Length: 239
Image (cartoon, rainbow, N blue to C red; front, side):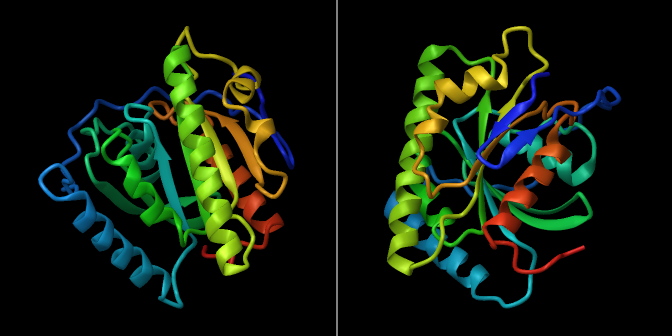
């Protein structure tokens, strides 16, 4: 696995971990958006997020986004349970408290299908950090689609940050599925996604990982923690 690039330094690859246990079906109920009007879903999501961030106590709020089938839910559940979970596709969202690197995080995993992507803004407007998951084995078309969505998200964050006079939340790009033979190395993905074209005010880091085995996930969260400390987005240590 190739080391990751970062505006703040280098993310080192993780060592090999044990093979995943036998999968079991993840039965957590997700919110379904296909049966609701997008407008009503957006309003509900906005209320949910604003209610969450209004609480004084709680771990840092992280939003996990990316194209569909990039491995977002698999990564979340691997961090949560420490083993592979055969997750169903997320149509709405999942929310879990996870521990990594001695810290606790509140992670929102939002569906990545095209119809759900307009909802991302409702979850990310008040977040402490963003994690964008990319399938490293994707073809050129999907990587271009991921690049477009990533930069759209960055632009939206710029607008929100300027409107509220606050720094942009740090962005961690997870190059997932590095175990596959067709996976592109991190330095090539950085070019494919145009990470160097992100605004200078947008702190970012790129970390290689494999959500199925868990390889690189905790190192990725450590990189995110470092970004949050540098940008003063870590309110307090939640151990």
